[in-house]
Amino acid sequence: MKICELLNEKFIVPALKSNNKQGIIEELINLFQDDERIANLETVKNAVLEREKILSTGVGKGFAIPHAKSNGVKEIIVAFGKTTQPVEFEALDGQPVRLIFLLVAKEDMVADHIRLLSRISRMMNKENFRESLLKANTAGEILNVICEEEKSL
Image: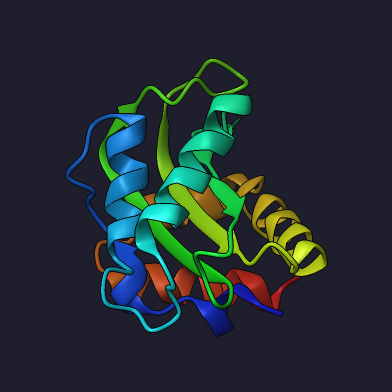
C-alpha cells in the first residue's frame, strides 16, 4: 500500500488556516466531511485527538503525523497539510512543525497502519524531501513531490 494510492489533491492543504495543534488536526479531518470512506467523522476526530493525548505525534524535524485507528473510517484515509508559520505541536525534539500528515485506519488494519506510518517517517526524515514540500505551493505540486519521493523507497 502506498501513500500516493491513498492521497489526492482534495486532501492536501498547501496553507493550513489553523495555528494550533488541535485546529490543524480538525482542519485536516474536516477535509473528509462528505467522503464515503467515513462512517462517523466525530469518532475519527475523537480517536486522533485521544491518540495525541497519549504522546505527541510531533515527530521532530518540523513534521508531525497525527494518526489513529478508528472504526469511524471504512478504509485508510490520508491527508497532508503545511502551515505558513511554524506551529507548536509538542514535538519530541521541542521544535515547532510546518508539515503534517494525517493517517487514520480501521481498527483491524494494524499492519497497514504501521507500514504507512513507517513509510511516511522514512520519507519525512529526509531533509531534501521536507525542503521540497515546503517549497511546493499547490496541492498538485505537493502531491507530485510526495509521489516522486515514494518511488525512491
